[in-house]
Length: 199
Image 1: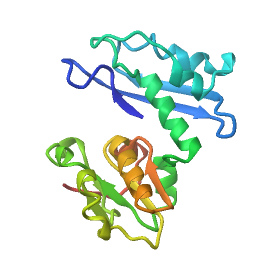
Image 2: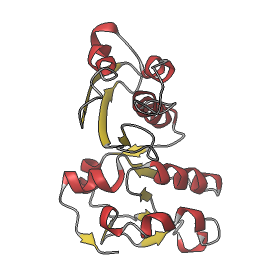
Image 3: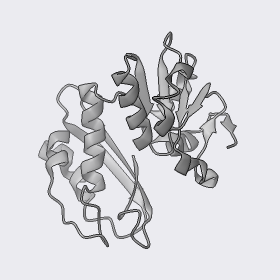
Image 4: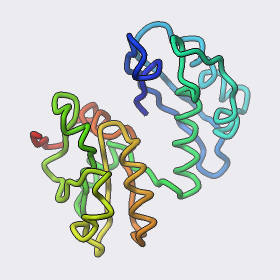
């Protein structure tokens, strides 16, 4: 998961990347890592102590961490990465990793989901040239006929959040086999192996 260290509207917000490894049957935290700019070390002791303390994703989701705009969002990135894992386990928002997506070659289908705001930030957004459908998440309901119903749909956006929204919309409209690339396009770039398209 990629998230800014402070609310994105706060001056000096920097991007942070978090990864958790968990048991899908028990939601027990098996490991985790975070990397980004300085000043976030305190909160990320939680994932480090998770395996020895037998913490679960439920525990991380409920952690009450200090909140002030210069230091964190109301929902700390630790809480948010736990929410992502819990949504995956529950089936509310199934995930595929960038590595899995590349390994499967996204052979069935991929819908690149981006908002109009992201279109205006082309330097930090993108899509793989394998994307057969590109629809802004705000337009997904009105352009739903462009999304094939006869195959698996894998959605992605820049970091995964709008992909999650798109997945929930698709499920609400009756699509069954849908997954979101966790970490979105930034994770796909980091993984490598994806042919990229401009715009």
